[in-house]
Length: 200
Image (cartoon, rainbow, N blue to C red; front, side):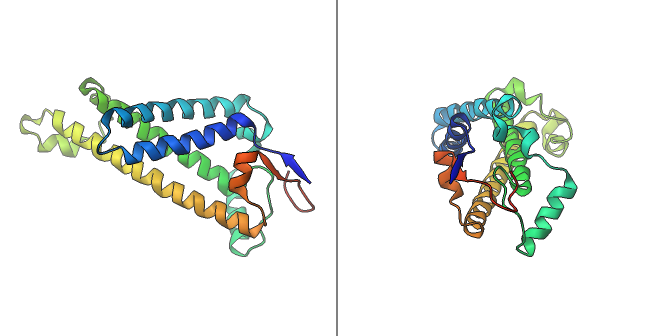
């Protein structure tokens, strides 16, 4: 027996964000306009997810799957010894990954937005650019701040890619462990109904 877990808008958000990040990543060196456009699309999708995490259906809501540090550590401990419980929605490790991805993607989009206009570079926090500013003649920090921003943008994009790879590995592991194709469930919205010992 299967039940509907992931609503259509959540699934559309998920795969649209995957596509937006992939296009932005692949166009980072060559397609300036395309790169910017997909960055703005990603920003809009993130904003939607935050709103949907508050007002969306049960399994989309942050309040449904966010757990405290003790629950996350306990789940990871159970994971190591292969006795973790199956969650119908997001498990505690998956919840942490969602927050990490939203934060890293938000930082990537924000720094990309700043890079579009020199006036926005001035909004770069002072803690990020002092070393670069010192390298600039006269200490103006203009080009140094732009360099710092570009480096930060690239570092956040690389961090996001790393998190995505960890996420994919986690999905693959959980799919095998619980005999359930989690990638397919994000297409169909359906998952196996909660059984004994599962967390609904």
